[in-house]
Image (cartoon, rainbow, N blue to C red; front, side):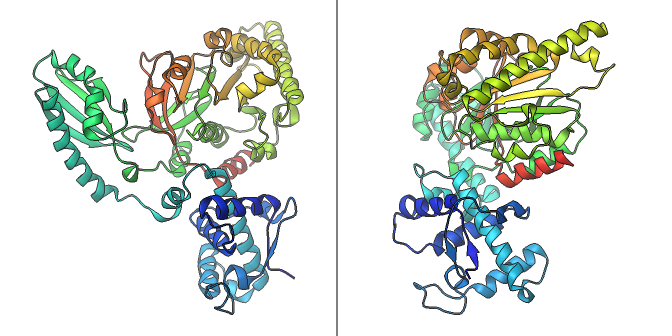
Length: 498
């Protein structure tokens, strides 16, 4: 009888890592299993018991293969079993040397969780070496490395500014999460226009991506702030713990949504009830789905099931699967195909009309006034891939537009996401009724214009770097999203269910 079992999906990612990650299809599988174990052990929360359930036929493994137990001849693999058993004992705070069955069960959970994390955070089109560096090996030396980096950059910046004819003094420099901020004192007021026109030359001179340097007028007279991206190896990661810490504070918002941190590292939250709808768009790999999860986890961590109800539509059928455990999903299920999506959207329209009629009977005008007399949850409807949905049926735009126009007063709010932000997907009727927009990195400035009504998203750094356009702010706000895992989502779901 084998010691460790995997599912069909587990085996698929193992083969992908061997073939496209290591580029050695014949490499032993234990290498991938051990990487998966290491990835799981880097997560604070214990792996979920659901990982004991296997879906689809996978493979069987023995400790001799996975940990090298009892031998040192298995394709060069040494015996690390005692070391791994010790690490798991400390991690779970229990003696696993006295129970082989318990040890094997936990080992299997960790390996399967690690494989799941690899599957959701890496794809074969991206460098596996970079993934390893970011996820397992590399910890940015922020305190030392970035200070050296800033000093070098400041000297280069001063030289570059002189080259384009600007006389300035660097009053202050600060390190943000991914950007360095320089406060420049411009002695000549005409130098501001020169600086705006010379940003591409500065980018070239400093060796950063074109259009990635941004400029804003400071609050003090004569001060202009330059934001210059650091090399990715000096980026800070916004951890999921920041969301948890934010969520435990008393929230004034009716529908609190935490999007991440500002470029200087401050928490940024907004009220979906005031939005009242959001469009989020970004290219594949830009961090759009993680941003969606951040919004959903914000609601689950701060509100109860009597306060908010979710209506989820996921045409891809994979991104929202964890939320299937929620006790009060609108419609009782996640919409994974065109028929289910249509049923959910039409049911939302019916719910909106029913609530509005009920408000008339109560003598109130909207959800806010009605909430003082009766208790009913707000509803947040999330469409994971709008373009895919409308490509299958253009008729679904009709209920979406009706909801965008009228649902706010009934306490129903939309979050629409797409990786193809074109005019066909985001029509004029939807655009005019969804004022809050979130743009992650896109391919072309025309796509940025469709999302934000201005360019800029094409120059973002990816991996959660975003611009947020709010109704009460003239210019988009730049934010960096957090790094969330499936376990962070599972914890938020468990909190909501409790």
